[in-house]
Amino acid sequence: MKYITLAIKNLSRNKLRTVLTLLGVAAGMFLYASVETMQHSLAEATQEKANDTTLVVYRENRFCPATSRLPEHYKTTIEKINGVREVIPIQITVNNCGASLDVITFRGVQFEDLRQYNPDLRLVEGSYENFTSRTDGALVGKHFAKRRGLKPGDKFEAVGVNVNVSGIIESDSPQDNNVAYVHLPFLQQASRVGLGVVTQFNVKVESSSLLDSVAEDIDKTFKADQQPTNTRPEKAFFAETAKQMIELIAFTRWLGIGAVLAVLGLVANALLLIVRGRVKETAILQTIGFSRFLISCLVVIEGLLLGLLGGVLGVLSAFLFFHFKSFTLGNEGLTLALSPSFAVLAQALGIALALGMLASLYPAWKATSKPLIQTLNA
Image (tube, rainbow, N blue to C red; front, side, top):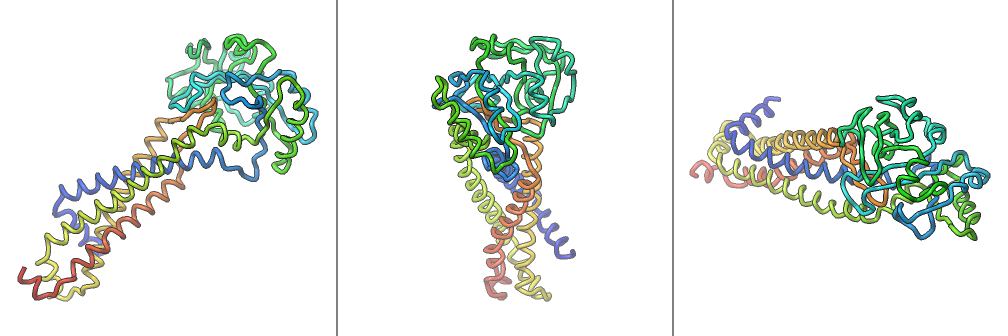
C-alpha cells in the first residue's frame, strides 16, 4: 500500500496533467464501452441459443413489413402442424423500413393471443381493461414510452395511426419493450391492408430441436398457395432481415480499436512526460536504496491507476448513458435495444487495466535505463 500511496502522490503533484489524462482515458473507454454494448446487444439478438423455440413466418421474397402480406386464416393450418405449440398473427406498421434510430413500430395482435403467446408480459402502468374496452387502445413498451415521454391516458400519433395509451408494459424480450401493441382489426384498417391480412406469424414450437423440421413443414404446406411463406428461427430472421443495421454496427468495431489505441498512446505519453520530469528524483531514490525494479514498478502502478480510474469513469458513464437513454436501432420493422450489461462493464474495465499496464512498460524501462551517475548530473 505504501508504494501505491507514493504513486498517487506522484500523480497528484501535477494535477492538471493527471486530470486531462484521466479525462482522455475516460473518453476513449466511453467510446470503447459504447461500441462493445452495441456489439453485445447485436450478438444477443442474432446468436441462437439452446432454449430458442420461436419461428417467424414471413411472405416469401419480402422484407419490409409493408410488402409482406399473408392471409390471417393461415393460423388454423399452422396450429395443426406437429410440434407447434403457439401461433400468433401480427400486423406490423413502421415509420421507416431502413436502418434508423428510434424507429416507431406498431404491432397489431388479438389481445387473447398475445396473453396466451407471451404470458411473461407484465403491466407496469395503466390497465388491461382500458385496452380491451377501446378500439384505439395501445400497450406501449416501457422503453418506447420512456423515449417518447408517454404515460397512460396520452394520445399518440405516428405513421397515420392515432392511438390512446392504455398501459405501459415490460417483458424479458427486448422487442416487446420497444413497440406499441394495438388491436389487430384497428391496425389493419388504419394501415389500409384490409381485414384478414397480416404481416407475419410468430410460432412457438415444442422444443428447439424441432425448429428446422417445423419451419420446413410450414413452408411446404403453403408452397403452392398464392401467398407462399419463408419460415426461419426468430434470431436467424433478425440476422438476415436487418442486414443494414448489422453492417452499420460491424463498422463500429473499428471505432473501438481506434479508441483502444488512443488510450494506449495517451497513457504512455503522460507517463513518459512524468518520467522525464523527475529524472533527478529517480536518481535520488536509487541512492537511498530503491532498486531499479522497484522504481519501474512505481511507474507501472501509476499507469495502472491512470488506466483504472479513467476506465471506471468512462465505462460507468457509458453504462449510465445507455441505461437512461434506452436507445434502439430499427430496420425492416425489427428493433435492436442497445442495453448495457455487466459483462461488457467488466470486460471494458479489464481492457482499461491492461492498457494502463502495457502503456507503462516502456516508460518504466526508460526511468531506469540511464546510469545513476548520468542521471545525477542531469
